[in-house]
Length: 120
Image (cartoon, rainbow, N blue to C red; front, side, top):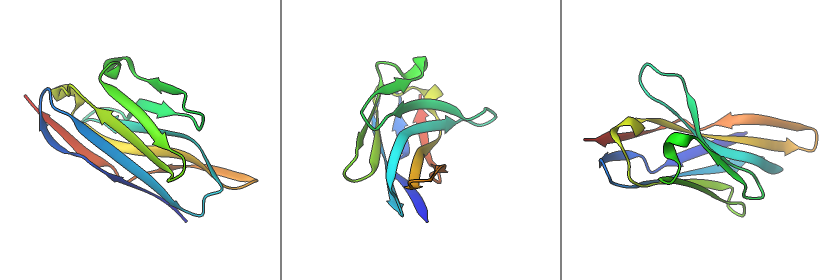
């Protein structure tokens, strides 16, 4: 069993900051890419940012310069530092990880989601 547990969401005013955390636990052989997605009401889930085991990152244009993704491989944790938040960042944020539970098997796992609300 593998679990991704998120924390750090909440309500913040525009221009403020939040830091999301997501810790993976369970039977883990190794973790490949980890990332954050978000889904706003009435919209499809979209990639926000992702990071490889080696630390290479990729993020969507709308968050460049404001959000920073990082990870701690020792604790199987990925972070999303969100600065200069805007009302359009309001969404449920989901942690994602591609996790290898054995040499022969890897799968995608999702967290339960954490609400981020940015007031204007």
